[in-house]
Image: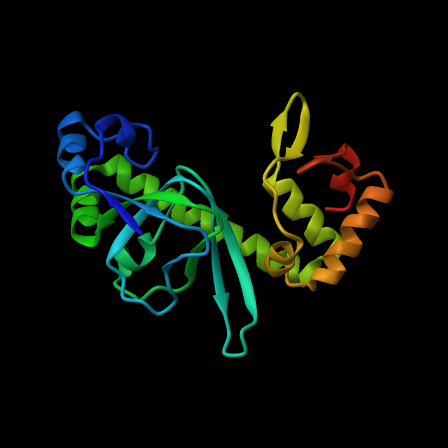
Length: 224
């Protein structure tokens, strides 16, 4: 891990979580936020750790995961630039409920528990942004529970692809390359099953793979 001493106000202003802060608050924040770099496959926080900081992603991708005593893993979500993690334990003083691991080299902003709570107390809009983020994650968890209970593997893969896609030139495209093993851990299936489903979706005309990108056809919603 490499630490960077300075954090500019411009950088903080471009982070949605801090964008609503006043100039004087941002100025104070530049002195208490640290900027750190982590290599690929680094465990940033581990399940059961004491909660001491909030992390905001500047660049790179990370996975949020849980595992059991037998080493089986479930990926709860993927995180990218402008997203943040670690806030739940800062609010309820609980230990970390999941592990976060870098999938590629990444840069993070780190804010201590004391300074995070101070920001929430002094800025209503920031507190509301954190609350909206918590609600979003709760809804995502509800959807995941529902899909595991009610959908077959085809439906789970289709829904995950739709959630990961973005609108480009009028089409839904998954631009981020995600390993089939990671997809399997996100939907509760085996890697072999995911490979079979992806192949069937291609043959059936539901998706089109071009290099690292996956183009979704409109009829994929029929599976979802």
